[in-house]
Length: 555
Ligand SMILES: Cc1ncc(C[n+]2csc(CCOP(=O)(O)OP(=O)(O)O)c2C)c(N)n1
Image (cartoon, helix red, strand yellow):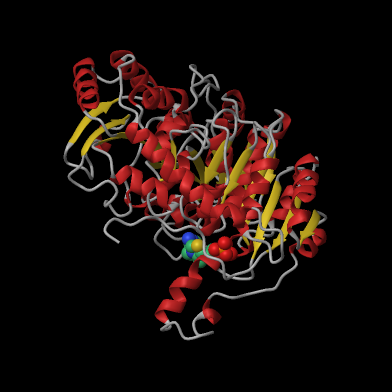
């Protein structure tokens, strides 16, 4: 079989239903993929193609495939930063000019290897069809294996032509086990589990902080079972929002820097913290102050290098969070527990929620984002997928949108503004039977507006809610502070618009619904989520209101 055909058959055989690309690359493979029923989503920028592949991968739990030719490789690599940070298995395929073109001022090409080094866990060149099966299998398995991250194959030839030249007799099979994330479920060592169980049984105030790794492992039921057994409140990373029902009496909310006040207070007040599949990075720990650095920790992670990375006083369990928590729960059993810490935590959460009620119920224009979030909570179907951008979009949705912890999925940008809209298109491709709602600010939406055309052309029916406050809302506080809090000064750095995104959408043939009053939100969301086409809901809000802020120790 010709290498181009082998690649198409291998990708389709591995369960790939969509690939995301900018022409001109791997043309013969793309044509073959079409013949095999795989949808080729032609994007307008390589970065958007990478984000689409990321959203696809997170929902399909399979590698998302994106492609670009030589000159597009740098753009594609820039789009791998977010899946790298977000631990998403994206496989990037690029073309690169032949060796005879290297080191002699070739048109349109810089060295690819350094571009991909920082954003992949495996990146190599493919110089012959004979090497293709082995290298694709490795790129695929490496992307899926813990910790999932992007991988990259750089095909010889501007458009990856090398694989068109040679033949292979290998069967077009990437992974006979048809693995999805998590690719493996190792269980932590028994002696360590016993030690962790003893430490938890001896503590009165235990908190669980569940992270993106626990969400990827689908460990929600096991997290909740541990929490109930220990009467331990559960906080999460932003990416694990909704791993348990957010309205549960033990739910403390998102912890760290993108949080409302309760979660940090509760985590900070614990005697022992269980980090389950949690990267213990600066965002979830508020720069390693929540919990304090010398806290007693039980940490469960599939990657041994994560154990004790930032908290030295750690008992580590190396294993898949779901499988290891299940074993830990067996060992812990159903102990008699003092529920006073859980009750105290529930009171902290309830008191904070009460302070938000007037904003949630606000019925006047300009629309409050708290009200918008409450309407999204009501509108999102029980198996809906919510894809949110970074910055305030992450904070608003992570603090104010409630999720059922059973069927709904929350995907967040790992930090790159503009990620959410293309990622939501990829998510919808992976789950055509589920409703996908993208929540973005106008600043984030501007990045990839052109993908409205892709959504329309490819019939990708995502609903996009734009929190349109005519500026980089999150940054208002910072620019004002730097400008000495002088009225008006600093704002020129972050204001733009006003733009009517429904008119923008219509120019691409996409339905747009403008929302200016609170009462219009619910019917607009119902219409957008009921449609079998992409819809932009342009919600006019105000730049001034600030999103919830975290509780900071000692302040
Ligand atoms: C690629 C990139 N550039 C810049 C930033 C910094 N940043 C974070 S949030 C934000 C403003 C977001 O504005 P918008 O999307 O309109 O949402 P709002 O804060 O107004 O709700 C900026 C500029 C970023 N996260 N990513």
